[in-house]
Image (cartoon, rainbow, N blue to C red):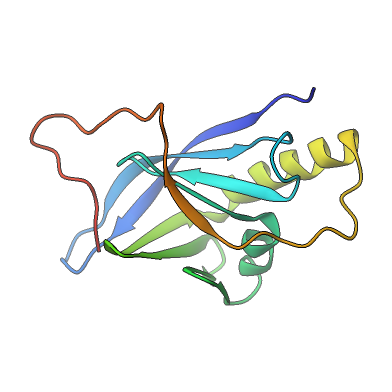
Length: 143
């Protein structure tokens, strides 16, 4: 069994207000799941799962799949826009963080088994059962 790759990162939550704020996110890849699926865990306990290729292609040009939109912002940032029934959340990531994470997932996939011919999974949103709820008085981020 291959180890799960988890990387704690910071993203900037983009809001309608004049300020953005840094938020902790968890980037996760579990080869026991669909081999080409990655997860972004948000501070409110929500887990977004989608094809690794969506992030990889979004590093180069805008791409949309289902409820997820990804596009480069300058040379060092990537925007990930997540749509749900609760609203829209927009996050700005450092590209180097995502490149490092994606490289680790590709190396893990290559070490386990080829995933050729497998169809990318559509994005999905689910609560993370192990998620820590926000502190009292803190509000989950909703766009």
